[in-house]
Image 1: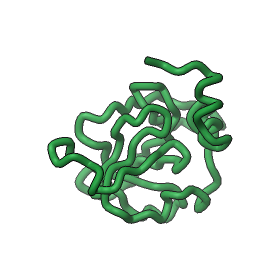
Image 2 (image 1 turned 90 degrees about the horizontal axis):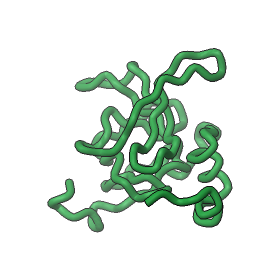
Image 3 (image 1 turned 135 degrees about the vertical axis):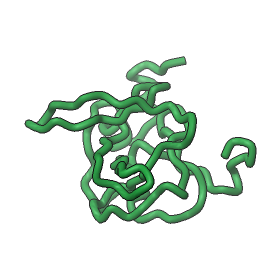
Image 4 (image 1 turned 180 degrees about the vertical axis):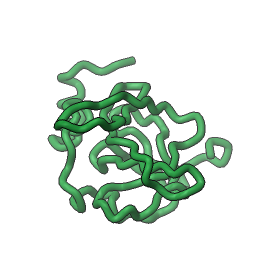
Length: 135
């Protein structure tokens, strides 16, 4: 079930709304998860869909949370982005269409990918809250 624009405005903070619904980008080194290293799962702030596990997070030095792969079976879709005079691949939540960030091909092995994600598009579930069968 998709929320209306007004429902998103009521349930999200200003920066969460701008990032996820208007495809804004938070300033580097400003988000709550760029330097967050607890064990658990990162989910979509708009709909709660599982996106990334902490085991795939790495320090890319860019100021945004970075992951080398999405959680297996996660609902991530990739879209060609030609805004700002660049050609990039935008990453969105396939469940609610929230803008998450971008994926680049300069990440670590084994995937070689860097999912550069806005903290404002994420929520976090500590490992103690993640059911073992869901991992």
